[in-house]
Amino acid sequence: MATASANRTVRRVATPKREPAPTGPRPVRVAKGQQPAHSDLTAFERWCWRTFKDRVTSKPVDPLLEENLVRAHLRVRGDEYMATVLGSTVVAGIGLSVAGVVAFVLLDLIVGLGLLLGLLPLVALPLMTFVVYVLLASRPSSMAKARGKDIDRRISIAMNFMSAMASADVNIDQIFKELSNQQRIYGSVADEAAWITRDTELLGVDILTAIKEGALRSPSKRFQDFLQGVVTTATSGGQLKPYFLLKAEQYERENKLTILQRTETMGLMAEVFVIGVVAFPLFLIIILAIFAIIGGNGGFVLELLWVIVALVIPLIEFGFIFIMNVFATES
Image 1: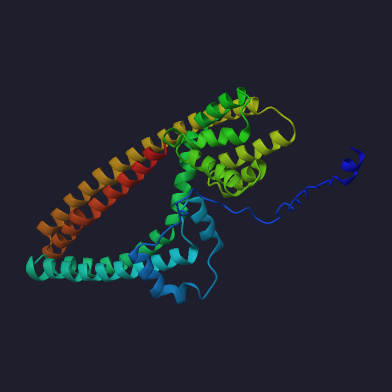
Image 2: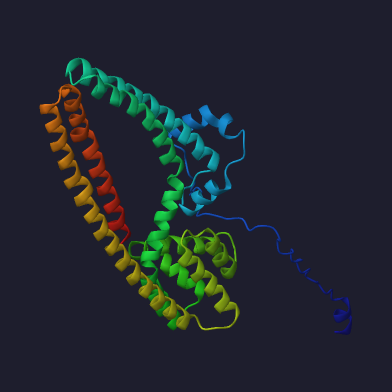
C-alpha cells in the first residue's frame, strides 16, 4: 500500500489566467441576424451631397448647426444638411423663376390685367428663393425649439410619473427607461429619456454621466435644470421623490401663468386683426374707388385696387392665421 501510494502521480490542473478587463470602449452588439440601424440619405440628398460636397466642406461647419441638429434629433451631419439646403434652394429658385414667367404671361398677355400685375409675380417669385434658403437653414433650430416647447408642456405630468416610480424605490435608470416607453403620452420628454437609456444600455455610460450629457443636449431649459437637479440630489444623498413632486408643482404653476399670458396676447392680436385687416383695407378700397371715379388716372388706381384685393389682403390674413396658429399650438 505504501509503495502504491508513493508511485501514485498527482495531476495538477492548470487554472486559466484571467484576461484583464478591457479599458477601451465597449463594443455594441445587436441581435443575431440584424444590422445596426443607420440613417440613409435619400436619392435627392445624395445628389445634393455629390454636387455641393466641395462647397460645404471648404470651411468648417457651424457648431451651432451641429448642436441644433442633435437637439432636433435629425440624424444627419452638418455638412450633409447644408448640401441639402443648397440643392433644395437651387431647385426652388429654378421652379419659382419658371412660375414667375408663366404668371407674367398669364396675367399680362393672356388675361390682360396690366403690366403692373404682370411684373409683380415675375419679380416677387424669384426673390422668394432667398426665403426658401433662410427657412431651410433655420429648420434645425425651429425643430429644436418646437421640441423644447413640447417638453415644457409635458414635463409637469412626466414629473408625476417619475415621482410615482421613485416612491416605489425604483432605480433612477429604470425610471428613465420606463418613461422612454411612454412616447404617446409624454412626447419629447420620452424621447429625451430614451436617449439617456441608450447611453446607459448600449454605450455603457453610467447613469449620472448619461443624465449630465442629456442635460447638455436637451432643447428645453426646464428639462436641463431638472436633470442637473437629479444629478445634484442623487450625489448628495437626497430623496428623489420629494424632488420630483416639488418640480411637478413648480412646472404646473409656471404652465398656468404661461397659458394666461398667451391668452391675453391672442386677444390683443384679434383686436389688431379687426382694425388692420378688416376696417383699414375697407376704408382704403372705398377711398381708392372714389379717386378712380373722380380722378383722371382711373386705370392705375384700378390696378392698385386689384393688387390690394387679390394680393395684399390675402397675404396679411394668411400671416395673421399663421401667427394665431403658432400661439394656439404653443398653448
